[in-house]
Image (cartoon, rainbow, N blue to C red):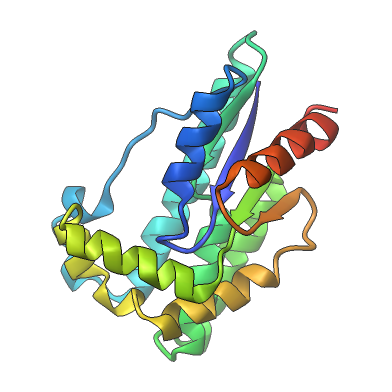
Length: 204
């Protein structure tokens, strides 16, 4: 078994994509590690941007290492799908730095961790990066549904077109990275692209 990671802006449709992959083929298994920062870390609202970036980055690294360990410890064939990746942390770090929320020293420390983590893990990653307007609309629909009220309150500053636009730009910069596949949505055509990539690249 091999792990792949699904990255992309919040609201891009990663959860839906994972559900479609798992529901469409027995080849895919969703990673069962669940951790909701907004509900499980009471101090999150008072953390600095640097502290949040560091916490999430180390969590992404742990998640990736654990996924690799799970795959190595099983004789089953298939693909373990992991929600989010180190690339997500990298993008958030770049955006917050551009917004002036991280000092030069903090940025360099975080980038050093990111670069070393990516070099150690070399993750196969699907980047789901729809148009900015589509992501913002999805976030609006989700906010109006009230399904994630606490998250929406804590992350309100990240749900506007300017922030999502910066994220989109940073994800675009990753398209040519080794072991990265870019898709623009979570429709059937995108699923076919992923299946082809899995069989021809990941499982070769």
